[in-house]
Image (cartoon, rainbow, N blue to C red; front, side):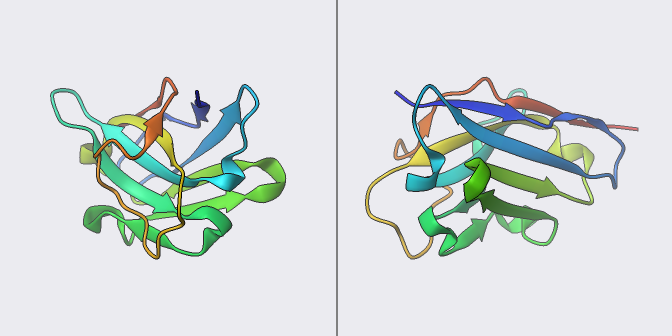
Length: 129
């Protein structure tokens, strides 16, 4: 079973920035997985935000985040980051990371279709003035 520790959320004003971190706990290594960031706002379905394949071969972003968010990984720290700039009130949500194993895709998926394993509490991001 995979367990994640998401951190870095908080309260930020519109236009501000946050960097979220996703680390593994309990003895597994993020390096061997495609990692996705997802978010869920109150009353809404969970949606994909960004993903990065194993070995950082490629990344993928939801259209509304493409020019504002950047996903990256630091192998030495076994951590995946989500740099979020130009935050908007509609970015308010709990953000989760998740892992996808198996064959490395050419482009990772942002679908919430059961192929990602979730296992963290998430980190709350609130964008408000």
